Image (cartoon, helix red, strand yellow):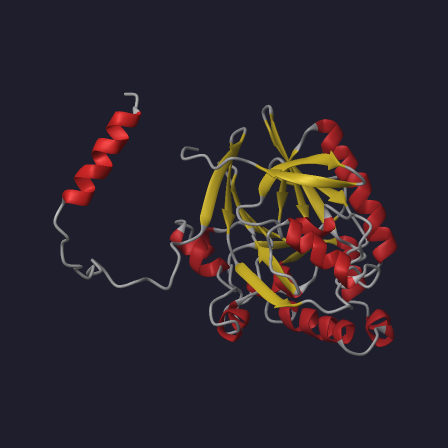
Length: 329
């Protein structure tokens, strides 16, 4: 139906002639909620069902040390461009659960129950959201760890310090295991964060997990359809994966980048989390050039949830194009 000038004027006149009704306050039909629905998202790679399970996020003030080789104003410009608050950094966490048909496989475990308590539920949500997605931790056959940072390994334990996946084999990168379990490396670690990581990792794996640990090498199929890929720099044994089944393939990038609005857009920036920034940058450019050339979908642990998308070249850096949400699997 077309609106003519006559219709508009007639409508305006009618509104002017209508009696003024008293204002009636709106009554809320239900109390306002302060929680989101359980956060998980499913998709298929061939015959393998992937469930992305949110562990939540962390938000902290931007310090100059966070990206030591970038100017603070340049970082703020990148945040502005991504419609994120200046002087604040947001990092998301998203472990995976793979149902291969024969095995139930978890990839990384989130920040853990201690973080859930200290963050007041902002993160440490993997166990809750995994249960909401219908998974019993006792049914998990394998837990695959990409590297030994707390947001990837601390969920291996319950709040009581017991194995969170009591029947699972725990697969770890051989190079990563050798580094963090080496007493000499621990003795040479700088005071502060690095010494704390050594102690934290020893604490996690000595809590009834050592007998469950199986180191794996790069370039091997370590679980059905899951091949390990060397992506060092972030840590000495940092590992990513190619998940392939039938004609489907996804690159699971672990921490090749942190927040992509900063580190995919600016691959030359070095996060203070990166143990060797120069090597991490070379790895980032090598991997992102590969996924661009092969048009591979990428699953990012630190991408905004649910973290699935494609990477395209954008000037001197890259841009992540999020995969559209699909209501069916």
